[in-house]
Length: 376
Image (cartoon, rainbow, N blue to C red):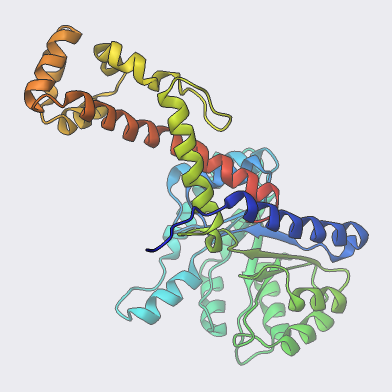
């Protein structure tokens, strides 16, 4: 007989929390070891709200971000939160390896995304925007920078910080940096690949020694030996990096997913029994006693689309549901359509709708907690 055990997210959380506490102790003793990390890898509005509640530095990909997400970022940076928006060049690069028929990245679309954030923001001094580039192609990247020079300069004039990814090519990183600097006419954050296949640690260290840039951002890596070595080589440079920490905690038997799932189940049980839950607001309307006692009143509180879903789940139509004048008539109609099992199907629908309502709240709460602990 196979045995099944529930994932113990509390135990996993405590274990990871202790690891972050130890890391924080090192940072407290050696503050110079701290490297600012932007939490990237999620374009979900709910996840971003969780990160923002934790006052985390966030990173999103322009081509993945919906307009509500872009407006949320505008609100966040206006309030002093730190964010960077990647163009999506690396994402496009990987996609085209898999499918050569895919078109190159549309940087006009990328700049429209940037403009959406800039126009909706009151202050963008904490916003980093990534300039156009093509992965692994130094000269093509420079041609793109020439083509979009005015657009990049406009964003910088508005107050945004500009990151220019420095690709390897016929010129050294130092030479390439200087021609980009001359073209743009302002200092920028140097975006450096963290992959040794793209640029070797020797090349990076030589660049840092030659240029001693004001700011460097290591793309796609958390704090690592490479980053800390770079700090030693160029102590006056401000270093940042970005890492997709959230993804390794998503999936079956992984912390974020299991934590969210089990808390949703707990919160759902509380809501259906008329009890509150610390991670959920406005759950009183889902009390099954109240729903069964006044089904007409419960339906009156739904929007039109939800009533349509209710009708579909109860094998009837929207028109027939709203035509019922009182609870007795509605229950009689639903029992007739569901062979006397209306109670079962109504409560099944209520439970599913309640879960739809509370799941985003729980997700935000879990992301907030894990981000505050620097686990994601």
